[in-house]
Length: 296
Image (tube, rainbow, N blue to C red; front, top):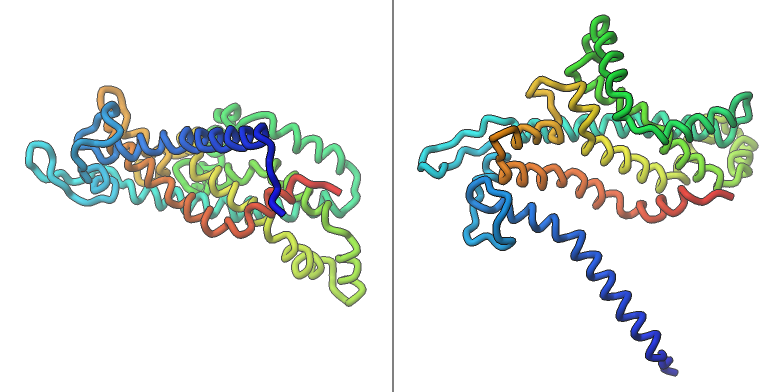
């Protein structure tokens, strides 16, 4: 039997579709503008959304391929954009792995173990989320400057220092994982112990496989946060070959020297690793995002 909807319901449905289409257009339009700038000849930010002529000179530049300039001479790229992209991927993947390792074990301790100061520690982690890392830039620089004098491998201008700095921001991920662990009944681990499993085996072989969706989400959030981060990376890294793409792209828009086309191509290139991570993680992403905010 067909269900006849009232006219008011149909108008609401139409308004909802119009709103969603408008929202999608608002999200996609900036990307189209950046893509258009990357395909225009010359380095101009203003112009038509649809270029009158298509030029790949900016893409050849960021990919490290020589191209013909406006004067007919061969131009050789002088900035290692692909090297910066690899640095960004390497730092983001390493910091995401370290963040996942630390937050997984810390959240398990807070969710399952009872010890003195547990509630105060959880409150402290919550308060830490209120202060952005940019407020501690001076302290971060001073700390790694002193550490580098004793251990140069994790001092300034090293990717290890950046990974270590990013790994300190695990407070949000600890709370997210703890909320997920709270949804899992403790009887599952108790049953594993009855079957002869040690506490570590119960955690590794029983709990973690059940928490795979939220683990993927935490890795994805940590990866994206690290690959697009600018303030901390700009303070710790200064050598050109060590820069991440977020910091290196600043060289395209120096004073009196605005290479908007090259900057636009590098910006789109920086989104490729994030897109790949989303495609690989979409299978678990929805379930993990929903489960991390539920308790009880």
